[in-house]
Length: 228
Image (tube, rainbow, N blue to C red):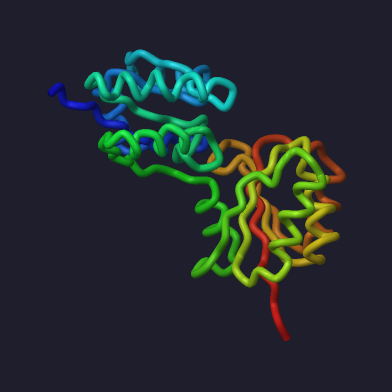
């Protein structure tokens, strides 16, 4: 029986291209195929490190079609690297569906650790790090966001959320409305040239963002509920 290939979920930089491990570079140079959430973004990384491995798209728009194709390649013996637009694949991106199916098919998975915005933001926040909950993106619809925030109202652990720039002001208003005016920290463009970390109560950060157009991806770190 032909030996199955290996699936390598590879952590890539969340901004600064220097934040990649030697092992990650070794794997990316040695696989047969790289499945990428954003091929244009990944090409910049590969070009920077002079890597010339075939690249295929694997995004939320085509994952239902691409999972069977990638599983077939793996079962035929190809080694495949899985990368997200930034950070560790499988965290708030379509990588989870491929990893889940690979497990089901008995394909060996070898994770290659790398940067993750949620951990970078948490460590820089100054809020408790010993216990936390990650909620990813709350969603496009306000009703769904309110439901998720309501479930988090009694959460005592530090809460971490991702948000897009065009929704961040609305989400901050909803956080204040549902969770109260808590202490929080926002990390914007983490590890990049224009990295910015804002600290204060939700209302204070809202005022800061009223004065300038939000740009870049946001990592929100929110204080858990405190009991008297």
